[in-house]
Amino acid sequence: MSPLSHSAQAAGGAGRPSGWLAAVNLIARWLERRERIDALFETLPAGLAGAERARCQHLVFGVVRHFGRLESALGRLVAHPPRFSTRAVLFVAGFELIEAKGTPEADGIAAKVVHHAVEQTKTLASAAEARLVNAVVRKLIVALAGTAPPRGVAATAADLAEYFSHPEWLVRMWITQFGAEAARSLLEWNQQPATVYARWRGVDAAEVRPEWLKPTAWAGFFEVESGNWTKVEPLLRSGKLYLQDPGTRLAVELLAPQAGETLLDICAAPGGKSLLMGDTMKTGKVVAMDLPGARIDRLKENLARANGVEVALVQADVLLEPVMALREHKLPESFSAVLIDVPCSNTGVMRHRADVKWRLQEGDFKKHPKQQLALLHAAARLVAPGGRLVYSTCSVDGAENDRVVAEFFNSRAGGPFKLEAKVQSLPWVTGHDGAAAFLLRRS
Image 1 (cartoon, rainbow, N blue to C red):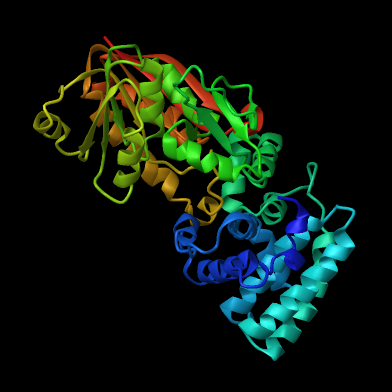
Image 2: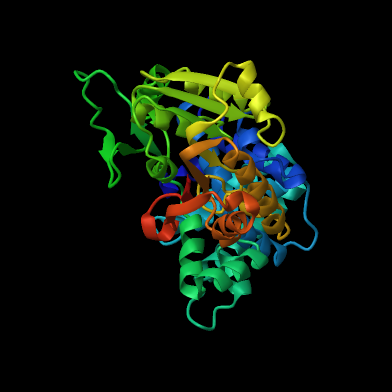
């Protein structure tokens, strides 16, 4: 969305819900409670649709993405933070100023941002707080305009963390792991809005793929350019189109599903990889296993869209009694191919999950690998002799990838397996989400 999404356009029109006001309400809740933003979006009223809904999402993602930089700038301008609703106005206005920076209309947009923020604060809070907003946002224009991306050897982790809005401990970890230049590239990547990709699943050979699906370097994946959502929705409902980043294909390509096989997908929800496995095989069976919970409905919905292959859903904890659950469903107790896409830090998908970086803790990189190793051990027990196992994550961090696989091979359970191949996506290099996948073969 262009900088013309500024406040002057965000009133929503007479009688229509305002995407700008909805964004302020969600940001106020996020500031107060740190709720997941995907859960916050689910609370948006049905009446907020089309361009206004898109504007709300754009503003919320923008504020959360640039939260660290905005918080630092506002902290230097406001001695005593106002109520959360007023604070949210300041953050939304701040993001609008960041977005407008460097455009020909920047000065005009800035003036409109100030005026709109002040007028809305009179209704949302009080006249006194409107005066505060007026003073702070005017100073914020200067504060944000005067900052430039830190570069060169003089750029410290603290400088990079503030400007690119990431926790300093995470920046330090990435500098150690990837080097300063690559870490900076990752930070820059994370700060850009996510491209929307989709996989075309049209099964009718006579049906022509829509022209507005822009081809990419990855076969079967297309870019969904903005302004086409009304055309996208019916194709999603029909199952002809599935929103999916090309990074998700890596694990499935490494598994190389074969026609007629019966495959097991562990930690399957929401089902994108299960669906891709089925579409690749065209015939056979995909068994999708995951814990009972809120994500199961989405998994069921996606499995219902499978074409040609049989599907089976098993709600079970693979760490407890997976074999018993498989028996209850009259399914095999071992498989020629198993994919386990483990829960992880999500450091490879921060473009899509902008709030992840604010929820991560340093201790997560010790906690996650322990759980991931346990899951890998559990998955290995379900691989038939001669079968293959793919361990995958959407993390770019070695602690959750190579080190977990190395620990598996150092254990007794790793004895029958050999590492045949691995693939990793570093997003600033590949141009899509980060991920890693390892192909293990049981002898």
